[in-house]
Image (cartoon, rainbow, N blue to C red; front, side, top):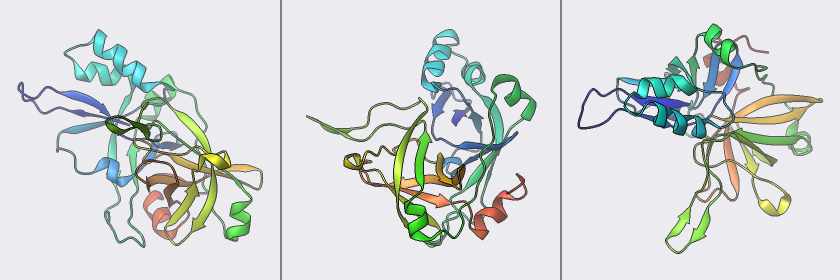
Length: 242
């Protein structure tokens, strides 16, 4: 998900910024995190791209349209309207950190083909969830690299996926292990709003969206559950729920 800040101020150039990840849950609905769609200027515009390498597309568009951020954004993405959960930010027990961006379905279909993600996180209990395969996807950076000047996070802007393992579940969150010795990858900065899938009953299920984790992106991905009554109530006006 990218934003275009159309500030109209020549001293502060308009720009296109890649900010977050997300998931198409039907033909015109992009699911992401509420902290990705809030605290922006009133004139910000939201764009969604399903390209594999968005950063390369933005770099090429910046060279082709050096003074036209609208053309840069349209070269790689489709503009949409953001809808943030009205109760965000809520308490830690349920922060309501969920949002959608409604897109013109015809424009999306003319540029990308995809199968919308499905959601189902049943009452399997820790044993059932622990035995399931989990993976996370997004356009974010990689885990911290230690260097002479401190930690840096390389990468970003390219869609990648990585296996994770179930750790814990509560009323709002699923926590997933990202520890490398267990063969895991994980999520990092820029993966917020991106999907966390579980394979349940032989089906790949959209179970949660990435929200936060540990600072160096080494240990735990903390993801917002999508099967809770609050999440389903927010999503129901925008998408047919399973």
